[in-house]
Structure formats: structure tokens, C-alpha cells
Amino acid sequence: MRIGPLDFGERPLMLAPMEDVSDPPFRILCKRYGADVLYTEFISSGGLTHDSDDAQKKLDLYEEERPIGIQVFGGDVEQVRKATQIVDQAGADLIDINFGCPVRKVVRKDGGAGILRKPGKMRRITEAVIEEATRPVTVKTRLGWDDDSIDILNVARMLEDTGVQALAMHARTREQMYKGEARWHWLRRLKEEGVRDIPLIGNGDALSPPEVEAMFDETGVDGVMIGRGAIGNPWIFQQAKTYMETGEVPPAPDWEERVEVVAEHLALKCEWLGERTGVLEMRKHYSGYFKGFRNASKLRHALMQETEQQGVREVLSGWDPDAPEIRLSKASLGGREKVAGGEGSHAPGDRDAPTKKPAPPPALA
Ligand SMILES: Cc1cc2nc3c(=O)[nH]c(=O)nc-3n(C[C@H](O)[C@H](O)[C@H](O)COP(=O)(O)O)c2cc1C
Image (tube, rainbow, N blue to C red):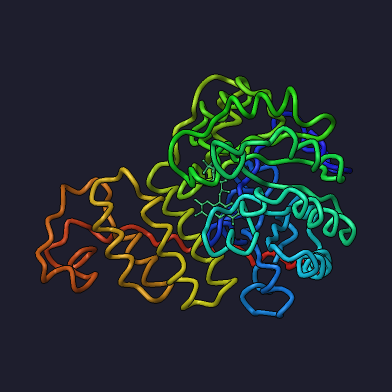
């Protein structure tokens, strides 16, 4: 599969843009575990043009992330045009336009999926981005606003005519939000009757290696984009590749490797955001990483008490995943010591802390 000058090989796998998830630390992990293309979370064109620190921070990219696309959104043509000039300077390989976000405050201003109701304006925004960008422009969108207004075959042709170089399709309508099944039959129709010469990237409910392969086989898409399936599970890319080669899903990382990945994820977060914010921001990832393990909610609770990297590492290294079910009294929920490694705890606390600290990746110029 090619996007402009970039060659991604056969059946490439993309990390989906995900707000508050697809940041540099998480992207780097997904890349190490086999993601072929990464996308940033969506970045507000208004935030970029008003020089908001938050939006600027989201432009941080690292050399080892390449190839990477920056995703931008907005419903004002001239604002998106100016934002594209800023995004273009950040040095990404691709610029992606978000025409799929279903959130009310975004669609209200014609951003995200809101633009699906205004194809003329969708074209003008796309043209403005392509005019300003010095790199290939891609679009990520949904099937339509609701079931009664799906016109995605024409929309896809229009986007291709405008000069978009790949189309990523989340196979749901805006009305569906994230509910119901993704309608993969639309991906097949789009491949057969919608796009002509540009790659189609399928997205929606490819949550496991067999589902990734099934999306390729059943729809004929050129690439598969994985979102929720990668949260707490960045090794899904490698697993899916192995599955497609051998028919076997390799075992997920065991406890020790998982702890190492979490420690690395945390270290990258702290490197990028500073210790305090990094530790706080890491909290939303614990349930994904330890889902299915005995006492997972107790572990998460213990990790949530920590405000420093070292404390998190100590909880992790002292935790025994094979310990019998821990029953906590309300009083004991107040502090981590009773949960992990403290007197009366089932956790032995005799493991070595995962001390490997990754070198900070060099930021792009
Ligand atoms: C937490 C979260 C944040 C998301 N943020 C974005 C975003 O910033 N831009 C975007 O295009 N889609 C966003 N999405 C949608 C995903 O990119 C993807 O289209 C959707 O999750 C369906 O794919 P999946 O079934 O593989 O998760 C987000 C989804 C989730 C779960």
C-alpha cells in the first residue's frame, strides 16, 4: 500500500488517532510492537491558530515514530487553512483531516462528522488543506451522519477528486457514535465502487488479530486501522501480523513483560510531560494493561495512590499476580501499603523493580 511517496508494504496496520491515548509515549510503544503507521490524536485548528499550549504540545513528534500523520480538525475553512501551515511545519509524513469525530461540541461547528451534512464545505476544507500542505493529505471519516443520509460512495469519489491520497473509514454513522456493529459491508462497497486509485483504510471493530485478518479478507481494504484494540494492548499489531502469517495468535506478554511495558510507558510519559503529570496521565492506562489478571482492580487502586514514578515501580515490582483473591476492608483502601507489600498483604514485594529507563527519543526538528 502506498500513500504518495510512502510505501507501507502489504496489509499495513495503523494506530488510530485517539484523543488522550495516541500521544508520543503510546505511539512509540505501538510502533515498537509493529504498527506501520501512527496518527496523532486530533488537534484543534482553533487551538493551533490561537497558539494554545495544549494544541502545540500535541504537535510533538519523535524520529522513531515515522511514518506518522498529524490529524487536524475544524469547521472553519480559513482557520483550518492557517492550522495546516502550522501543522506542516511540525514535520509529519502525512496530514490527516478528521471528518469523523461524533462529539456534539465538535459537530456543532461543522467539525468532525458534522461536515458530513455539508459536502460542499467538506470539499472546501479539504482543498484548503491540500493547497497549504507540502505532504500527502489523508481523510478519516464515517459512513454518514445517520442511516437516512449515507452518501459515502459519492463523498469518497469527491475526496479523491480533490486530491486526498488515502481514505480511512470508520464504518459507522455519526448517529451510531461507538454503538452497534461497524458495518464492514460498506467498506467492501467503498473498495469496489467508491475509491478508484487511492488506498482505503478500514476501521471499526478490528479488535483482535482474527478480526484484523477478517477485515482484510471480507472487505478488501488496503490497510486496517486499530483503535480500542490497542489500548492496554500495544502488542496487538505484532500479534495480528503473526496471526496473518501463521494462523496462530502468539500469547500476550506474561506478567513480567507487561510490567516492563507499563514501566516503559510510564517512563516515556514522565519524559514527555514531567514526572507529576506523567504519573497522573498514566492512570487511565492501568485497567487496560491488567485486565483479566486476578486482583486487577486492587492493583489499579494501589497504583492510583502513587504520585511519583518510583512509587509506581515499587507497587508493580512488589505485586504478586498469583496471590489469592485480596479482600480489602474500606479502611485499607486508604493507602497502598496495605494492598501491596505492606504487613498482611498477599504481595511479597521481593521482585526487582523494572529499572530499565529508555533513552529519551530525539525530538524532530
Ligand atoms: C478514546 C478514543 C479517542 C478517540 N479520538 C479520536 C480522534 O482524536 N480522532 C479520530 O479520528 N478518531 C478518534 N477516535 C475514533 C477511533 O480513531 C476509531 O475510529 C474508533 O475507535 C473505531 O475503531 P476501533 O473499533 O478500532 O476502536 C477515538 C476513539 C477512542 C476510543
